[in-house]
Amino acid sequence: MNKKWKMTLPTLALLTAVACGGEEATETENGEVDENGEETNEETNEGTSDDVETGEADTEVQATGDEDVVLDFWIHQTGEDETNFYIERIDAFNDAHEDIHVDTEIIIDDGASAYSDSINAALVAGELPDVMAIDGPYTASFADADVIQSIDEYISDEDREDFVDSIIQQGTYDGSLYTLGAMEGSVSLFYNKDIFEEEGIDVPTSVDEAWDWDEFKDVAEQLTTDERYGLNKFWNYGIGEYMTFSGAPFVWSNGGALIAEDGSTADGYLNGPEAVEAFEYIQSLFDAGVVSNSPGEMQFEEGNAAMALGGPWIAISAEDADLNWGMMPYPVKDEPVSPSGSMAYGMTTNSEHPEEAYELMAWMTNAESTEGLAEVTGMPPARESAFENMERFEELPWSVMKEQVTETARARPATPAYPVLTDAFAEIYNAASLDQDLQQVADQQVERVERELQRFAD
Image 1 (cartoon, rainbow, N blue to C red):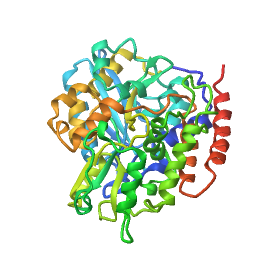
Image 2: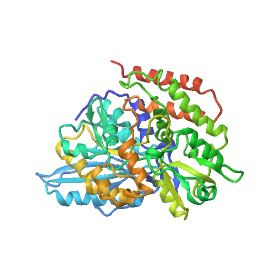
Image 3: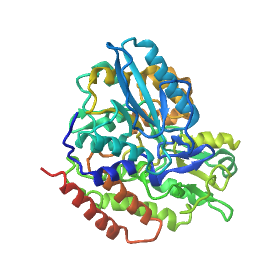
């Protein structure tokens, strides 16, 4: 099927290079972690299914029978347990569907461009799979480029309502739903219980009790000593998507925005007074010496930071380090807002079997898949019903994350200019650690975003 792609190849290369790995990854013992806490490995994972291949996406799929519908499915490489879970779910799908067969490729994600290179090569050749995993915040970019198609006519109202609001926000562009995620992401304030007990500091246990910015900074200053920082903000992750993922709520909580609601302009928003005030607040944390712009990989886990503003994967590394840890809600200025976002599944416009392709998407994001993935990865589930079935989210510390995902999570802006917008945000955010004039930096970065937005203007 030939398509006249609206997005030029250089722009799509930028889109996928940022969306599918790149600067934001940080090393773990098993490989790397992207901004949503998903592990990626340098070596290809091996699964149990004969239908799972690894490597570049250049395999031709042959039908297994005259009546069979064969679907080509791409997922990006993750940690071994997570990858094996996907393989098990795909095997179960094939067993449950006599007339649909899924061939899956696990595309190497080396933290650089391997996954995006596969997408670009398939795009040029017109050989995209039926369904593929993409980074959720880039839904608008793929949708506007006619790479993925709307699923509005396939998803039921009941199913749509079961997903947490942020997953629907993330997957929606121009009024239509394109992608679904099986898990959510969030950022909470992790803390060292032993240090807090020594200092006699009480902690908030719900969003209603969350510290405001002044309280948060005061505690961070109190906990900062010659031997430790009060806070780890994971500046070692680099200038990339994690900064937007974890940092945008500071702007939103202050009544600001990254871009106009209609997506027409970033001028007056990303460089507006509310956004600049939020950036300056981050700058004040560095000025006060409570956070480092070059923290060690295990700064929090080793007791060299009393708090950490990080994702669910911090709980895993803290447990592995035998740290006595707890979790608090994201700090608040005016409105409680928390980060969100996940890898998601999209149905490509190349698919000649959209009904069956959606059935695969629905399977990979149904209640069983969502709950199982949450158990394997430690990430919060994407469905309300999954939260209801998982007891650990009913009690502290995980009840904090559940409340954030279901009550305060906000998706990053849905705009085809998102790859440039998020890079601009990260540049401003990073400038906060360098004692620069943040209004000036924001104005400069907005000029970049405005040029990109002109490409999508009517």
